[in-house]
Length: 379
Image 1 (cartoon, rainbow, N blue to C red):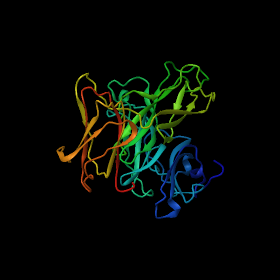
Image 2 (cartoon, rainbow, N blue to C red; image 1 turned 135 degrees about the vertical axis):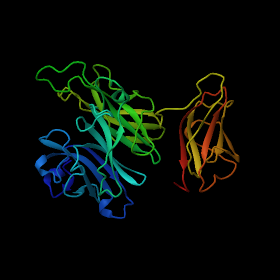
Image 3 (cartoon, rainbow, N blue to C red; image 1 turned 180 degrees about the vertical axis):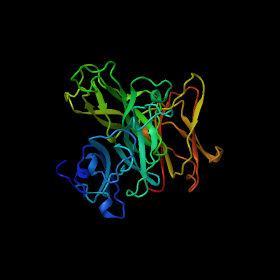
Image 4 (cartoon, one colour; image 1 turned 90 degrees about the vertical axis):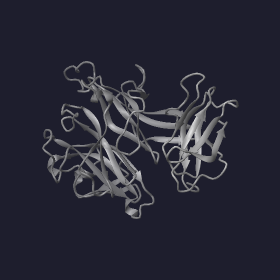
């Protein structure tokens, strides 16, 4: 964007070539670092201080992982005089977030710079770097995600994951969308784009540690590409573009013409029930059911729920960290909504790890989409 100024000692490090990710931390004690970003710069290799590892072939342009900081989001300064991945392998960074004690940057690597457990080609996979201070980054990378077909023996032909994940940091869990890449059935004809025929849908990812991601339903396209003839029928790309507005979740995505003809490079909007990525409900008719959450500390609890009827309320029980019921901490929920507060007989225990047990009666049609916990007054 030409309204932004990016300054740095190496000019090729200041050029945003792809996948810019921005993190706003208004409480950073250093005003010059309240905006942080990561992006891909295609640097001439001779300008990469620190060189690269001996893995893989030489390239005319190197996939450099660059970070920068800003006080206002308009004027930026590159961090350091070399890419984060200098001395290592090329890396197509596509995500940036803080989770726990670390900043994390996720993105895409590809064979021969990455491989399966037996050393064979993996194609495209998702890896992560981390840093405690946004200045010093670990040289050790973690594999964050590969699709099940990539890990199978033998692997599913043509199945890959594309460009890491579009990230939505929800505090104690991270949601993301990843590109479900499928190779073309046939090689492209001579003179055509190398990836003509590649198709990409978007799948859902979840992480509880900020490093390792999983698909709740492997292979499920939460946002499929359009039907043949529609504007987004070839391949769709994720972004860090999630918003909860009222009772809906809004997700923006874009279209990519893998044939290289720039067909309909528009922005799409997908909507769903607020946080309605999935739900828990009974499976077997006339059978009761329940689930128990992981432990948490909270001053208030609310549920995103639908399908409750007057004759079949949900029963909620607060448990200690060993799954033992806390005496007198039982509540009934007979309302539907995207954030229904739970009324308890007395305040939730402060400073103690607890868990929630949600019980469905045998005639319940309830669907629980999310459990929300509030930590502290006004949080």
